[in-house]
Image (tube, rainbow, N blue to C red; front, side, top):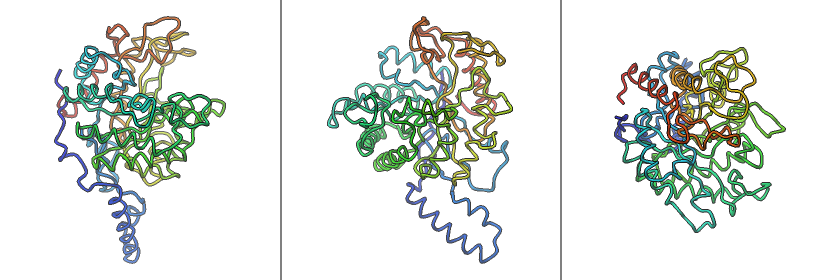
Length: 430
């Protein structure tokens, strides 16, 4: 199936370069503010936001912040942006056979998506020592995607045992590293290897606001330190790098589980200065059994993007980044688990959804993302179920658009139709 062509990099990327030059521009802006005060200029309110919208953007062209020309209406911002679509694979692409990977690429093209989010696990690249680099599982992913005209979004994450923080109860892959510089060097090596192959967009860690993915317990200061070292390392070898904050899990703060809410964690990252290290926020707004476009009295995870009182957009503005793009790098719904399946939004006490409702959610995901001006890309998690439907299988294995045996769920066709309808409506080519 035809896919969206990749525009020339020269037409898309920020020719002005790095954050250092952005800092210079901000200092100059500060001087202009002082002059404006003396002159009684009415432009001071804009200058005092403290944030110059970056024009840095990933290779595909999605994700750039809107130009600073006043604050356009929501409808104008929605119409004026390019919305990207992707599939979130976790680590499954790296373990596929060549034939399975080729089939996945063909399906991605048929779906009309342009992005593949794939775990680039430090644990797989340097499993036993800092002197070891095993790229043989990730190289085929990048090469296959490139051959199909698809973009790879690597999620840099997951610590090998030898590098794990000793405070972790176990040396599992979700343990943060003991030394930021070791993780940053792994990231630098990855960028140096894959930037020449067209990989310039990177997500730094996954869901650092919950203990299952940050075993020592969520720590915004600790994550900011890791982020700062990693961003510097990646940009030292790739001036075109476009960096995403590690995808925030959409959760309530639950001390007993060591969960910190996405809003609380983002605000703390703002206080720590983490937002100055990245070009976009990554967020995971699962809403099932509700549709993403649902409106509730307390606000859904999707409404938390820009519709609730203390939304992600409001928090970003509070910390000087009112135009920072938001990438939804995971969203979806599982079709198998223990317990009852929901077949409508009004269902209660359910653990998963029917294939019919999953298809409805897939369609609505595109609609809801398109209606949110700050959203620049949306990824469905996941492509294929991780196992057959058995009493022992975990819910996390059954978010796929296809079953484990390759059969398509109704959501596959629903997502494809929604993506193509959006592109047709907005004059975008496949």
